[in-house]
Length: 149
Image (cartoon, rainbow, N blue to C red):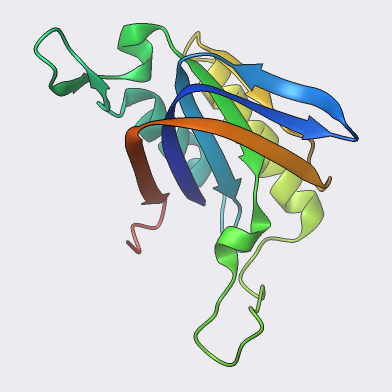
């Protein structure tokens, strides 16, 4: 699984011109599921993300996690995170998970995050969406459950 994680002051996602999910202070996660991913990848990445120390403490140092600040999480599926652009000009998505498996692991990831007791909002799987974020910092991190980067 791959994730682009952004610290936000607020974010929302729209599908069919309706708000599908919105959050205040917290993390915006674009989540891609690979063809080799399992429930272990979802569990690992969920634990990693909710515990990332990317929020400032009283001294202005990034030392607090989403759990520490009781922040919110917005998760949007993003299969294009598995786009391979190394050859030619059109990305290949051969390493992305098939839609059924990807949706199941996307939902599993969300369930693990909710299991930590935080508010989790989502986009709409396989839908065209507009994502609005207010990146705070900006702070943007790339995560991969296979630790490829």
